[in-house]
Length: 255
Ligand SMILES: NC(=O)c1ccc[n+]([C@@H]2O[C@H](COP(=O)([O-])OP(=O)(O)OC[C@H]3O[C@@H](n4cnc5c(N)ncnc54)[C@H](O)[C@@H]3O)[C@@H](O)[C@H]2O)c1
Image (cartoon, rainbow, N blue to C red):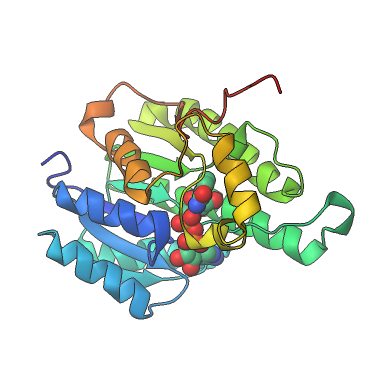
């Protein structure tokens, strides 16, 4: 039980990678705050799965992209669970458009959820740790696109690149408080965020041809990396990115 006696908040955990993280950490004894935009049936299903894994938790709703919501989410989570030890910034969105067609609204949404959300939720979480004089761990789910260009997804890449530098900065600034900060960078995972791409056979085949391991990741394979970085096994790890991408980042092949 690698996460025994810890309370973990996972944003965007009503579905997809966030849900897999919630369940995987619960299997290791963590109590889970399931966070998402709404306290809906899907968030409830994640909590049911956490309980089926032998742990417990609660659902807290809020838009991570709104700083006031972030403060309220942390306050409600602490009220319900007594304290928080680990924050997983997983909520994320993407919008496809060629650079010249990107709208201000889509740019703002992507930056607001992916970067501003992680920024101000982390700030509220760190205030809680400081007030209770405890260390903790933060894991951001970024993307292989914190490093790798992805034409037609420039706002997404900018948000994930920003998350990389935020992680590196905070690893230094928060180390004296006993707080470790790391990123997990998935490659291609079979979830709703990729629905369009995954339902287009030609695009899907082209993507898989670029992945040395020759397949998409299962969400639990990302969750396993988050588990490592959230657990005491990673006690000397801070300021780094763990890629979970089947080799995609460093793949180069002559045509
Ligand atoms: N699926 C992939 O291939 C892939 C690859 C690399 C990185 N990622 C990253 O993994 C993370 C999870 O993605 P996923 O594939 O599970 O996507 P998903 O669309 O299945 O799930 C995203 C979740 O985030 C929630 N969310 C969105 N905006 C929110 C907000 N403002 N406040 C709170 N919650 C919000 C959604 O409601 C949803 O439950 C994202 O940060 C994404 O960028 C995914």
